[in-house]
Length: 235
Image (cartoon, rainbow, N blue to C red; front, side, top):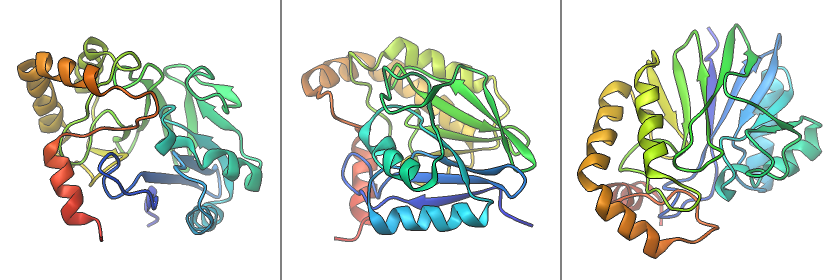
């Protein structure tokens, strides 16, 4: 039986992205392939995406979780190679988007359905994507496989982020595939952990993120993730 999705790791490791960005491909011959977050314009990496896309019926859509560079910098090149349109929450967040997609928009994904969920907080334009029958959440930068995500104003908003985490708690999720780090197999526990962490450390987070704000930064992660990255990423 075909796996519902494939992860291709982008070769963009750093202390901000961990071992790299998890790019997702899903779909099959019946629906064509969907690519989520083609991260960089790198020839070998894009070729791997194209090959997996062909195996799944050819790339028909490119979805972006949000407009940070480590989630969309390969999208224009991939569109040029395939003709597939780029979808995102807004062109304000992702200027290269061909179509804006609202909360609740669905796409055929093989024998399943992929649903866009607007999840602001890390960034105003953030979407997660839920594979409905599989109950798999492709979470972008809302959660990380290890450590915690730093919220950076003005693009990020702590209250919206907490509201997003609480909304995700109301959804039946079997696993979370984050954009950075390993798959999360206990999503309910992870969401509870994130909410507790924010409630305990919100004043510190606001102070630190205000001092370190840079408009180009992608996903800044807490110390436990940084330590995990150093152990997981070849030097």
